[in-house]
Length: 317
Image: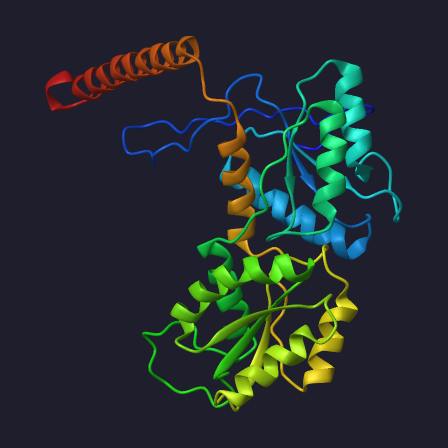
């Protein structure tokens, strides 16, 4: 883990990634530049067992995607704190400022517009911390929703599979939270999802009374006989009771939230990387020099190994 390895440290300690060796190694992912700010995943929920489990799995994916990244989690005030692991966004920013560290990049754990973002931007402005855009709309979110629907038996895993699913939905309501703005943004992901499923998809806001029911009625009026709900929700940003109530009131089956689906972790990593400042000319020159030196050293070692292998052959015995 790259959470704080030193007791009382204001932000986690960066763990450098190891570079694979050999000429057949896989291409390296972009490396985090030295001195890069930390990634703080801003969670629109208080710390608790449910939110903590999702966040920890997502950060594990982020660290797999990007070796050496500094990561921390910032919650809303309150909740079931277990110590330094459950710090608020405000506490992390204050600790970074007190230690004279670069302000971390705040990545909000929301798939689109959310009321949480107003307060987050105001807090970040006090410390001069950058805040990225939400994680969506994005094709990877549509992929995740598709997978959750297929896991619930409400959609084919892919359109290439021609076998029928008796419980497959013939219309989908993409549910989200964050009001009408969130529903409008979710409509873009809905278009991508409709292309994957080949069924109509409409978006609705769980936190707007009557929104989901109206969307379900629209699908039924236009010919859908088996509409289903598909949460465009990661988890911590939505009250679980909203999801249950929507399914109960509409009588529609529902897929599970996105949760720690791998594509969400990939989006967090790519969103953070896009927010980092572009490397300077000096940094690029240094990186090229280091790569050239490493390639030269590897060439020398290949030559040594080749000479050793030749001396061990029949002529060298």
